[in-house]
Image 1: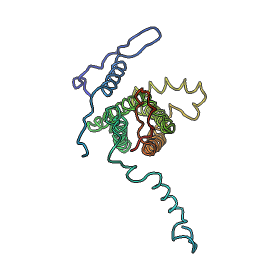
Image 2: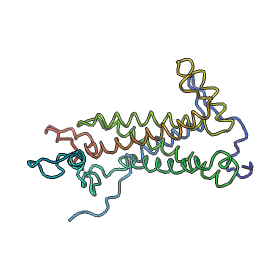
Image 3: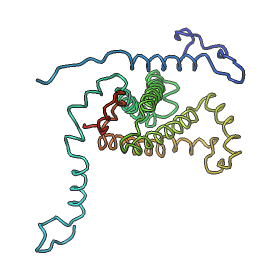
Amino acid sequence: MSRELLAVSLNHPGHYVHWGVIQISVANLVVIGLMIALFALAIFLPFPQGRREP
Amino acid sequence: MTATTPSSPPGERSWTARTRKRAVGAFPPDQLLPDRQPVYVASWIYVFGVLTISALLVVLASGGILALKGPTWWHTSWVGHYVNSLHLWSVELFMAFMVIHLWGKFFMAAWRGRRAMTWITGAIAFLASIGTAFTGYLVQQNFDSQWISTQAKDGLNSVGIGAYFNVLDFGQMLLWHIVVLPLALGVIVLVHVLLVRLRGVVPPYPARTAEPPPADRGTP
């Protein structure tokens, strides 16, 4: 795929976060953050009730 | 089919009749495909199980097309790129939904009420998914798969399974990825879903009151 078609340039080494013995790529950290956010939303957002039985 | 005796109704003693009787007894049609759920299921956290299965169906369909067309197609044609990406991103969603499903079930202790096997089959499905994803990375036929396989071989050799599970053997890894592991995963997921239908969806913890808690077997 030609480079100009990509929304994000991938033509460089990945970015990493270092914290003591922990090393994680920013991409994986973002995915984990999104999953935690989705989990919290699933807990707290109200669920549509739909139609009630008489 | 076995012969019937005068004392038993025709077909009553055959293995098909006995299997049918047991299957319908364990899974009555209204329990197998229910049209209503307990009121506590009205929460978004209960949606992630079916989201995981939905993503799995897209994974299997796109993977089936990739298997039929082959690496030259998925590396060179734009339709091949699209289906390849569909396979990758449906796997990403499958794993993410499954982990959120796992978090939800862990915090509501979903093994309660004789649901231990439901929990265990879910855990096995999770492990099988990791193996399937790993072998998927190995059969991409690009520099990424070359890097991952050469990094993984030393770890697998050090625990003594390299002779039986050779990550540098493309043919072996392809068959693990498209035959053995998807078949195992499909069967485990089927058993997992049947167990959910059998035991019902796990209810939340009862409120902390002075009254004794209600029975926690969900009525599907």
